[in-house]
Image 1 (cartoon, one colour):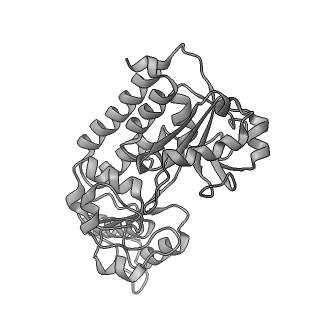
Image 2 (cartoon, helix red, strand yellow):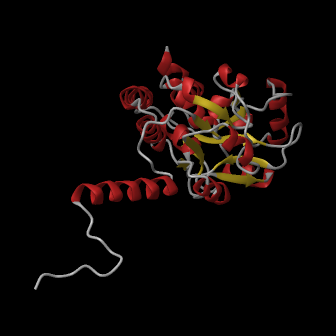
Length: 298
């Protein structure tokens, strides 16, 4: 005797079953923020990924940016939607995005986007090698994979060329500072032994004096600077408003016994390209390399 379907259930036709499965898969992908369709209306909360989108030729798809996005200048004309700690969910949704690029730690925002069925890409802030990888992944999401791959390859090649230029040269013990109290040597924030700043310094031919501290940033006292005795100090200035100047480097004269101070090897590099892990990272790495090894670029 042939099997009889249970009451209220009908066997699905193959085509109908395939269509139903595809619809379910699409809904699941949408909820998980991994829909593969090309995105044409992108909100990017992160300065690095905003720069990536413009550099790969997809800037016309960006409809909203984060509070701290500054480059390229075109972002100044776009709506601001908050940042890591204060994303404006209502404004994001009002822009009708088909992709939101957010920090991987923004769990609340991810949940709200899932409820609104808006795909997202969770960005992770890691090392130098992850920058080209992120460029390629975002390029695939917005349908410009070839251009993104070319951009990523150019970044990789430029950094490799820098490594080759400084190969075999002495590697000075370097302290890379990206923050401190103005006109004082307090609350000194420096690159630790992890993250893209550390990787940039190493690629530029320096030895990170904090390489043994496995964090992206280290808060230092003057006593710790004295103990680490860097041969070079590079300070980064990138803030808007009242930026640090060469005159501010005189603050380091308080630590006259530090080799970098004693030998007048304290330098200031200005520009947010040094602290934004995006397409300009190769140019930033070269600037550090030229500071450490000017002889390699003659």
